[in-house]
Image 1: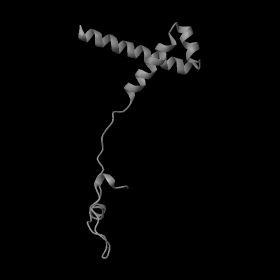
Image 2: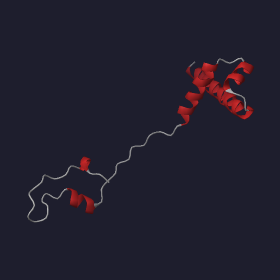
Image 3: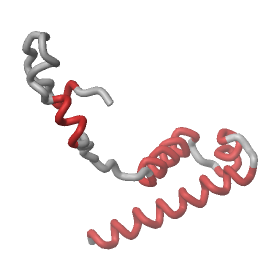
Image 4: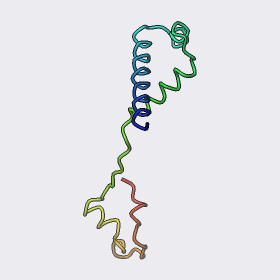
Length: 96
């Protein structure tokens, strides 16, 4: 039963991909295309949104690591001689 439902969903996605392509190639407005095909305009926009979000690339987290030279400067506990002591800079305060 579950396999059948997934197959139906995929067939529906294929159908709407085709309709979206057909509308774009027709040069008609979405309202005109939907009227000609007996489709609710809201449903067309819903499928357009749904298929666009399914196509989006997944987010990939990236960690940025400072070079050793930057790290050495950022974590320096003392300024040049004569200046007063300052606490080390936290990595989240660095601006690159």
